[in-house]
Every structure is written in structure tokens, then in C-alpha cells.
Length: 104
Image (cartoon, helix red, strand yellow):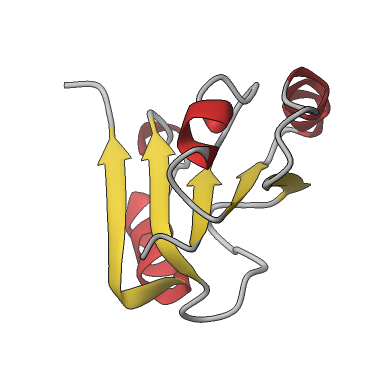
């Protein structure tokens, strides 16, 4: 089941309400503190959602923390995409689902 989800690089939180509908609890993070503040305000009515400032290249979450990880149009911005992929593999459970999009 998709009990715990992570939206890695949420930006202003545009997708979080929709994503939260598919998992028990969603954590959304971004390196930009202002974006997180905006997203928190915009999605304050979503009860199974929390936000934090975090760096995709050095995530603060423990190993095997999430069943679902989304990262939408983020990997092209991080500078070290291979490091981000290692972090995704680390925080995602072995049978977890990762959905990663990037510009074609």
C-alpha cells in the first residue's frame, strides 16, 4: 500500500493535494523555504500532508522511509542527478514506487 509518500521538490505545492489523495500520509519537501511557506498556506486544509525544507542531494529522512516517491521536473535542477538518484533509492522502500519526470 502507499502508506507514506514523499513529493521531492514540491515547489509551490501545486500537486500536493492531488498526490495526498493517493497515500495515507504525504511529506512534501523543497530546498526553497519561500516555496514551502507558500505551499503550506495554499494546502493548509489537507490534513494528511506536511512540509519541510530539505535538500534532494542530502535528504534528512531515514533509509526505507517511503512507499511512494514523486519528483516532478526536479532532477534537471539539482546539479548532481546521480546523487539525487542514490538518495531516492536510499529513502524508498525496496518494493516502493518512484515516479520521476523531467523535460524531454
